[in-house]
Image (cartoon, rainbow, N blue to C red; front, side, top):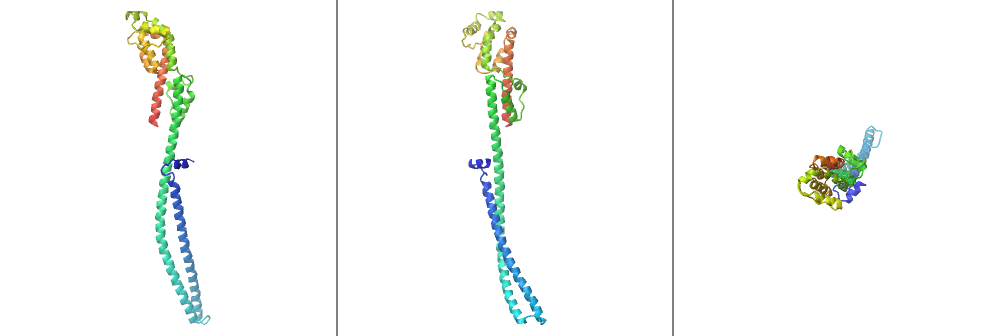
Length: 300
């Protein structure tokens, strides 16, 4: 029961609700007891009045010569009047006490009712906050699953659907379009670059030669042939540009790698166009995921 959990966690208002309602019940019980006491006194007074009415009737008949003697009736009536006055006094005192106690009880009743309302309101807000926290936690978990599948280059349609369902937001096309098959990971793109780098270098041999002896190309090319990590190199040569592309991919930054690749000469870009298309798709999907996730965080 969420109310018990909130009370155990010390949420304000979670326990006050029961306390306030217990106060209401106690006040109502005391009020009912006072009402019963006053009604009992009034019943006794009503009975005495009935006796007086009977005596008056008997007195009237006695005066007509049809009933008991007048002195007997007078004595009986005097006794009854004394009883009536006594009961009337008790009733008046009871009514006064009843009025004071009812006023006090009404005040307590109103205070208890106000506390119950406040407790109910606080509890409702606590329950709502708990619901929002649970929804946010579920969304965070779904986003984490989406991020994990996306970064590994795996299909992420199921995780994407969960995020859309929990957030009520539709994923951008750049992200959802590849959900069924996934997009290449940064590591897979780096491996692919090592396979197509020679084609990019071969497509612009004159430009590399004109830049001077090895101008970053020889070192990068030998690194690829030997299977060693590429050393990031400054310069405008194809080899230098590709070294920076690979460095950005090793850092897990496909968008930055794409920005570097766009500075390649057109012949080199054309030579590795399919790989560049994969890099562009990965960069676009990654940017779409980052922006969508940021928007979901702002909305929450």
